[in-house]
Image (cartoon, rainbow, N blue to C red):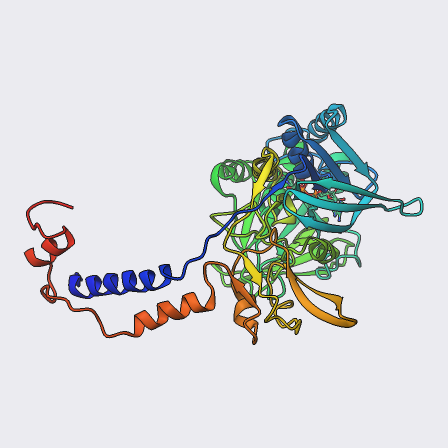
Length: 487
Ligand SMILES: Cc1cc2nc3c(=O)[nH]c(=O)nc-3n(C[C@H](O)[C@H](O)[C@H](O)COP(=O)(O)OP(=O)(O)OC[C@H]3O[C@@H](n4cnc5c(N)ncnc54)[C@H](O)[C@@H]3O)c2cc1C
């Protein structure tokens, strides 16, 4: 519905409010800070190595921090890929590239013990996981978090109680390393630990992994029967081709519903018996099995929280690192200069981790490529004569930009807060919390906002245009008085 009268009145009011504020404006100045042209990448898996190669390829010294004694992360335990390729060959090639790149400094067996500073000027303390925990301090401009995730250790379907029950990764290992003697029938159970009340998310790679194993098994031993018990087959995009291939090879897919999860019990002959309720038949099907493979959830590392605290970045409800904005800033944290990629962010396949890592490195490069970073001008400013150091503003600051300081004046200990302008985003939470008008955001100071509110509360401006539909009068007014000429 067109309401030109109301819209014009609103525009007039907005202009009046802006003019009221403009009368009280003060000059704003931007500060500049130098940038350390080095990066720290935390985690030496596929994502971390990709980010390090990309950053060093752009010419920046990159510190690759890996807590294990070896690079590679989860890929080290992957035996074959969905398309049949050998991941170990590719991994070897990638590790070779990392080791050959003189700009990448690998810190193996090392963890992050502390992070200070802000984008362009971080100081990270690294601590060796062994040999007495020797510490090193690195000055750098950006951080990429690529610390990965791990496979859940299942607590259901007799896992850990019966050796015929494996995770999908353990089955992958058996398929790759043994001649599958005595394996006539395999049942795979999907969504183990995922899409549940405890972990509502989809682990995304389990369908690919199960189908990968099913295809490899059928290719190696065509007479073996393979059943995949699924809730939804999530072979998105071109992955659909592999699902079709599995079906063509004779893999049988049976759907189960979350309310009727399959059960696994030991059979009389030493094999297992899996019972699944097929919703289409509305009947229970009993499947003898030589192996039951559980597609276990991908879960964040238990110590991700500790790293998040060092970096002052958030985790989501499931414990994965949380990006600043799903669509607009998908590889950034809300804190400037820190980026994320790979499994640390959410479950994803190797190729997806590589693409995301290249994106994160690209974003990190935008900071490292500058000689100076220019800070915003509209930031918080402490009004020394009003601040009494009550520190109400310190805790609520979402960017950890405010600290309480104590100093001596005329023999007395006084308190005051201090703003780190490199961390402040000018959000105004401190100003809203302060009971003493002791901290204000420049350009949005209380008296400037009060003038706008006062202007808004004045009676509505006179308006002589028509009331509802757009007519010649309205157009005349919006076009500066001439209804015939377009604006
Ligand atoms: C069980 C499982 C099966 C998978 N199967 C497939 C598959 O079949 N096909 C496929 O394409 N993808 C698969 N993936 C996904 C694939 O492995 C990942 O997408 C890819 O390896 C990228 O991982 P990453 O580098 O993000 O994390 P990771 O491989 O987990 O590497 C993270 C690295 O960071 C290190 N680290 C962790 N915390 C710290 C810390 N605080 N300080 C320093 N270092 C730290 C770890 O030691 C590790 O080396 C699978 C993943 C899992 C878990």
